[in-house]
Length: 253
Image 1 (cartoon, rainbow, N blue to C red):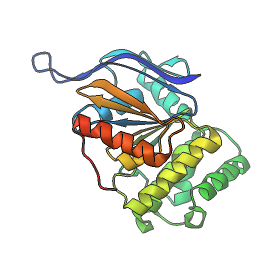
Image 2 (cartoon, helix red, strand yellow):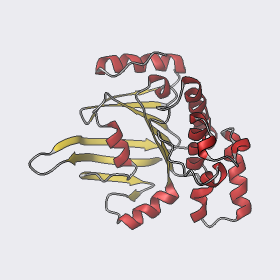
Image 3 (tube, helix red, strand yellow):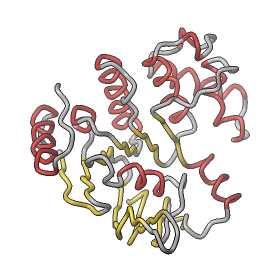
Image 4 (tube, rainbow, N blue to C red):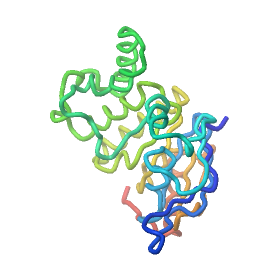
């Protein structure tokens, strides 16, 4: 079953006389429980694609269905409502509220769900233990390291069990140890809860945790790789190879 179906997605910026087409008719589908990476050189349109798929930005043309709900024709109010209930987000800048504790930040998506306090606390404990941040629950974001902030951000994205989680360069601001720790936790969450996760990354190490990697070039899908039975090490090498052909940034391991 597909959680997301996008057809003929176009996105342009600028005026009629100075139009820049960033996405040029992309078709993409993401199945339930998939962990999908989107890669491509700078300026290829990968972040624009994530923003359009996740309804942060509107497509110029095309259709996007999430859970069989057509997103492109929704009013802003309905879209905001849908986003709150069905989508989870992890951003490179964490987007935590500094005036709230870790626990309060994580519980935010549940504040609109109408579930009981007892049930909310149960969900909080589960996700905080899973992401190893239970002992930080009363701290404020300003007291946390980058890795701790990003794990808090991930917990907030997970807690309401959204249909799909979108992450834009989630390891971009982290050192390699914090990055691999976060990726391990995302991967475990994906397997344990059959969660559907889509990440944009320039880092082949991060992409090697995915089951499938879609490469974008010049606003179109260039190719995709599926992990299948490959181990992470060999999938990483396949990703590096494809990046080399695309002229993408190659990170040292």
